[in-house]
Length: 106
Length: 506
Image (cartoon, rainbow over all chains, first blue to last red; front, side):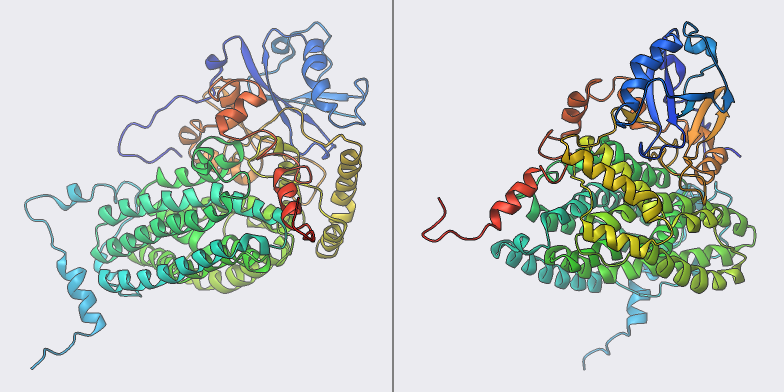
């Protein structure tokens, strides 16, 4: 179904990738821990390595739960698919898309 | 001899329908260009029955009397320092949410009913829309005047109009209403007049107005009474307009059902903020969200209204089962979000008192002790240790309702739900099946959503740091936001209620 309108209804997405240049929006969910009330949202370079994303973005965020141990996350998934990227793989190469979702469990 | 007085019915006819005419040298379709493209077919606008038969003179007289009474109460409230009689300063947070979130919607409703007052083809329908448009403007003004009494003494109320356009949690009501305003006139009527003003209205106004009455807020309670007769007129308009459209053509039924399905879920998600307010922001509780949902929705609507609507071919809204499944935990999930993101909100939040925790255990026996009490006790321990728990970052948002992604799988309060759609090669995320379904109906519309978090990341919100964004929101850090126990509101309240010192305060 499309929008019913009296004219050609065609507008670009307000969050399309090109507006973020070499970066993208990456969402992260700590599955099974509702103490953090919501999944988090980051802006990160597509070329950022998996390790840098984890230590510079995920760890400081997840540490607002005092029980978080940086070594604890397992069962990493990108959009539901189990993954185990090497530390030096970039987010883009690991398969993270703009506005995609990374999840982990502890 | 004096002329006999006209009956109300005749006066109404002479002053409304009798002033209408059928254009002859302009095609009526050009005079009313917006009432055909949705596919709704109206064959006879004269079949529109206005159950109130109001005329402008009687309308104005009646409203003026109500205004006079309201402003007398507000004056008395101001002179008698009425704000000191509240149950607690914490209550004012619900007023902050109301002024920032609801009052601008009243104004938006005023604008859009004025549009309907011009663009519906039938004079009866146009006149009903005109009256509602004036009501909504009056509500906007009286709410501002009522709640501004508190602005002199409490934080968070000074900048509500700008906040409504900018702040993350207020994009929830703002985007809801703009979704309706940018739809066709019949969708707007179904969205606002029927779904919002009829189906869900008691779940919005009863919590705020009874909350005011239970918590010593005479000013807001009086506003509520003053608006009540208008609201019942709006409810009637909602139901009558729906029935009128359904009676006009059978082909209208599936279109209206689709609108009802959409706007039930849109409205229900918006009421998440009310649910959180009801269970957590009122020091003295009226009833729980769960009880309110059971009474005002399950009993009054599902058992009362929908059996009547079946006659017209309308069934219960889609995704209703999920709303029912959520009634045991939805308010807790929303307030838990507000609690940990209140560093960026123009109100204060705090851990409920032990008495409140016990109340929640009693009204939410299946979920509270199991899932939420342990988290509140943990948050309290952290707070006592000087580590007030805040989320360190920005939340992922639902593309449709724009609430942070904190809702869980239906019936499972421990697993946060995420739904996705791909449109034109781009990913979009949703909190629920209901929001995803709404996106998939009209993706071209919702790709334009102004999502506050993504806007911050695009650099459109004053900067990329929290202090810069708060400054752009008009929120004064440390005064308007964050923890209630260390807030200026709490400190002032304690000072105002300190025992008098013999010989005068120093």
